[in-house]
Image (cartoon, rainbow, N blue to C red; front, side, top):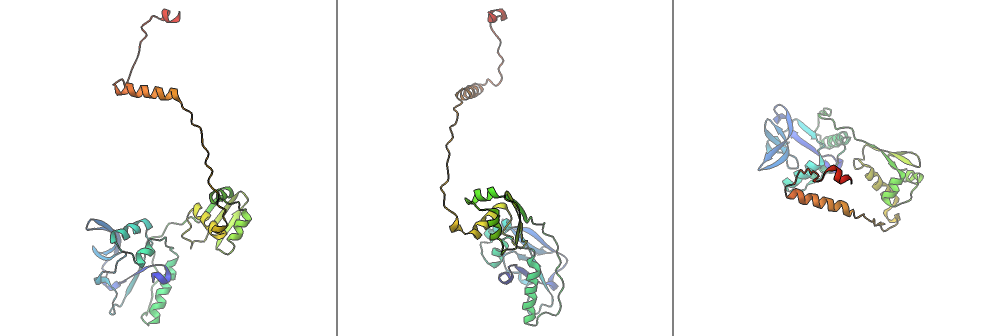
Length: 254
């Protein structure tokens, strides 16, 4: 399923579930693992096979499919702790699109119906909504060209995106990119710049050596001497000093 639809599905025997299912961190042998649990029993350590007690078998009458969209950094740590690399861990380590839930469900249903294994189907129940993804980015034309080392016009950039589901508005100074919500790989201004470079063609970007400008630093000798004297006196214990003149005021003013 993860290969066909892009969204991993965890299938468990629903008749074996008692009460609610939890997604939580479990400390096992000194390491934290993201797990699905039921009444303190582990159903699945994400990335591994389902525990035998909850596995779907040929006698299973009700199947529960669980769709997850996990934090990619947590899943990288999970993969490291598990010391395995399979389709599930690889898919969970990449930004997943919550819009894939419906599509993945249709793929699952089609496969079950192909073998006459499905008699009824319930709708998808969302437990936790994913926060809205920012898909609108404002970038100045100057910043794009400075970052890529190009001299592209706003019209040229708009033409590059003509076949993609990304709309561009704005003027010659600032462009506004409204990104297709299915493009989960574009979530920042620099990702947009990389997309422009990809569409324009990396080979079309002229190689230019970076310009390094040397700046003359002022020596500030007097300030350095004062700081060194201050540090020296503090090191000797003179944290607070108050001095009094040894001469009379009249003598000083002469």
